[in-house]
Length: 130
Length: 130
DNA sequence: CTTGACCTTCCTGTGACTGGAAGGAATATC
DNA sequence: GATATTCCTTCCAGTCACAGGAAGGTCAAG
Image (tube, rainbow over all chains, first blue to last red; front, side):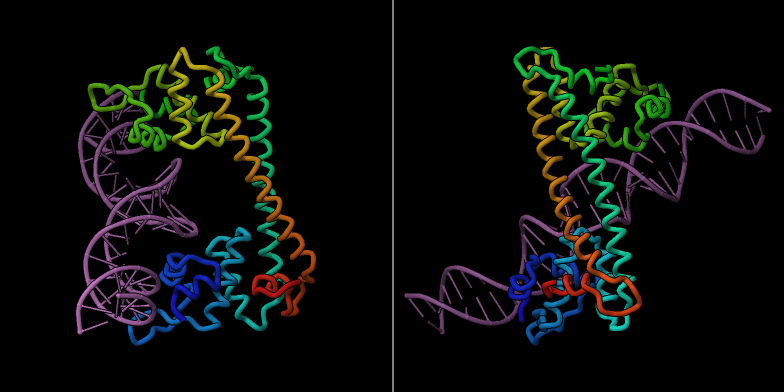
């Protein structure tokens, strides 16, 4: 199947699929006319990549997951370890963003937000305490 | 003052300060020896940039904030609008990450995580329902 | 005089793509 | 058969916000 169909079936843009080939995540066959020719297995790999990327795994993590995926003897512990580390990471990001939000909210709620030029947000950005 | 001192006082790496000059966020004077020469005003701008970047504003948003900062007649409403939009954005990211986390947690808690090869995380990544 | 810290410019790399140009191939319509 | 449209190819550049490093000039201390 051509790259357009593989794109539709995997939910990835054709550009991205070519990029994944470039960094050697997939090696599709080539048809006589030079077009890439994707098998059902290729499409499975692409869907796997789409799903794991959407879960926030980096390309290199996806590469690890993929090799675990192809390894029939892998231990589920190896996979779980990656997942738990990713959960930690996501949790850290959430905490950072929450703290950011509360700072921004405090600034915004102290700002009258009218046509006057004085503004507590600006005062904070300029380094003055609230 | 030299870039090293400006870096210490602003909390920004020298590399970053040079980059900010490159994209025309600051225009320091030059000393006779070709070294950049930062005034107190320059350092204020740098601290302003450091703070607003750390609050999650993009470079272009910082550029807007800076021009509002230098405009003595700006309305606090303009500043508040930028802050509220940023809060929205942060909130959206938090929601996305939370949903991501709950998906990952569900997968991980269903995974026995031992030496056996079968693994619900893999099953999900491969496109099979739980 | 030499050492070492600091400064300069310029070039490259990061992550994960995205956009676009130039041109060949396949398909649909007339 | 000619034409038009769509799909495919490769290759190059751009994104964002810097970071790393090379090659070389400058300055203060010992």
